[in-house]
Length: 219
Image (cartoon, rainbow, N blue to C red; front, side, top):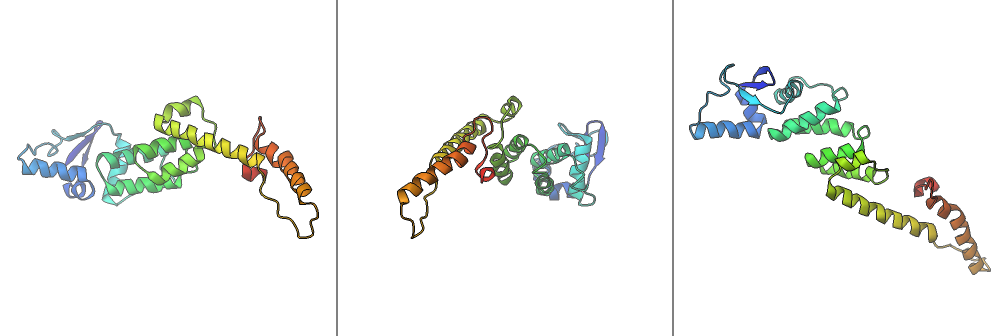
């Protein structure tokens, strides 16, 4: 079959498209079963038009479908990775999605949590969303981040931050119980001293107005 992306024509084996893409399999089945015009894609003059894709992105998509050449995952740009996920969703290709997800997993710590949340929601990647959201909770969100996040995610983020702030205040004000030695003769005084030490140290670090520390950093 002849497919056109931008101004470039691709001649692709129908068997490969049918085997690796539910979209093309269904399209060819419907065309055949219902007697629709099968001339589209049969020649350079009448190609199947692929809109919304770039030549480079479609070349990568075909390389995965043919399983002949795949760019080194470490060298694929993040933009190309997103294009591959987009095409895998558009054409319902499990092979392309798996390759895109592999690249995404290798880049989790190099892409901003906000962008990861956006990608994971758009392409329904649960484990990536969980990773990104857990990172986002601890970051200061700027206006650009707010524009990228959806309202449900933004609302959930606010509630999560509120609960963490509440827990921080509780930990700062309520020290863990003191374990007394059997020889301790004044447990009340020990408890009072322990609360004072906790507040002067842990409490002040956790509730510092200018630079509050996390529990791990404080410890």
